[in-house]
Image (cartoon, rainbow, N blue to C red; front, side, top):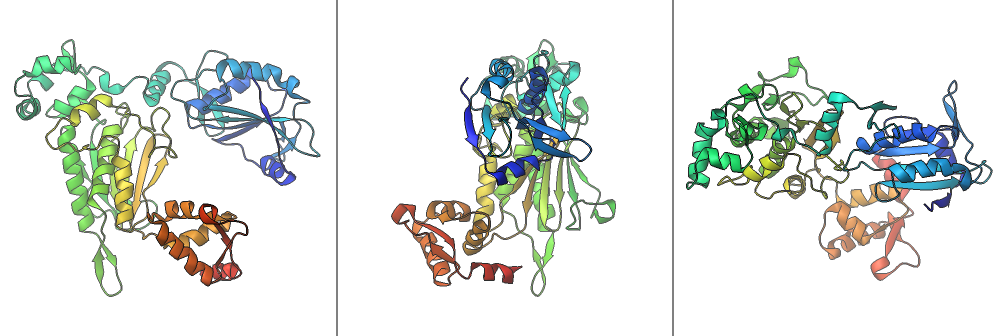
Length: 468
């Protein structure tokens, strides 16, 4: 496998040597056995991705690294052969040799993406990343990894209950009358694989049992909290009322959760210029984020969905990590349904909560932008996914452009429109013209028409000092 050699400057080399090992970063000396490295690479692929540098010596006492790479590419052949067999070069695995003037040898940089499937090390075991450690996955933990990867789904597991809880429930009869009046419940449930033998599946219970929480305790409830604070974490002292527990079938639970959350938000006030004002969020954003949390949560995790309404934000926390290859970075562009049966059948209802399947979070982001509020923030925790929508106004296009130039040499029209959520080319040109007249930006020499770029102007630094 041909691997590129990339020169790095002394400054870039110093940045690499200053790295701190952790969840996404690891560094090893050239003497480490390829099998041991395969554990780290597998762990990254099975968790959140990460970077590995091979050719850095660590002074454990001083907690510093020094550059001592492979003598040449051939010296790394043993490592490369193992990597090629287990983790072939491609979209998920990138390998690059780094070379730097004045530093000995070639450092091998391994860039790993989160993969769709489970990757194993040379010992035949998969690993996951937890902090700075790669941990072997065995027995029950392997099943959980399969759920997380989407290779199997907890929704298809059978529940120790009689088939009558879904085949003879009020919920299924109401659904059949509305949607499929020509069929009988039990044959239809079997056709949809919601019955396994004489037992219902998890998906069958969630959709059609009258009380799914009694059959799946601690796995399918939802709680709504109201905290009268802007602090990062709510406390018992700041709880406005006892948390509201929402139960019932999935369809009813989503509807009730959206209605309850909306009402709690409507009762929230913020201090305006002269009096208390209502805190307003776009209803479609609340609807889509709550629906997404209930539909795509990991039902194998024994926890509720938690909706927390603060004075300045709403948090929706859903049990389980992001499935398969989905990451915080690609979640708006990629699609993967952890609970495909739930998504499909819930969409059959007369007024389905997931009308635009696959567009939920995108709709929420668009709705927040239309209301002039900052986009939702998505965070992945060790055992949950958290979506935060803040009651904070978007920065002006001028401020967005100037902030961007703090860490970038220049900006073009297309990038500015994308960042400022401005569709019209003419509108951004007007913003550029205003900033240019105030000497906050200037045109980059040699750029014109479609390639026109702008950089910091003579008065840029002064404006930043005044801001701070």
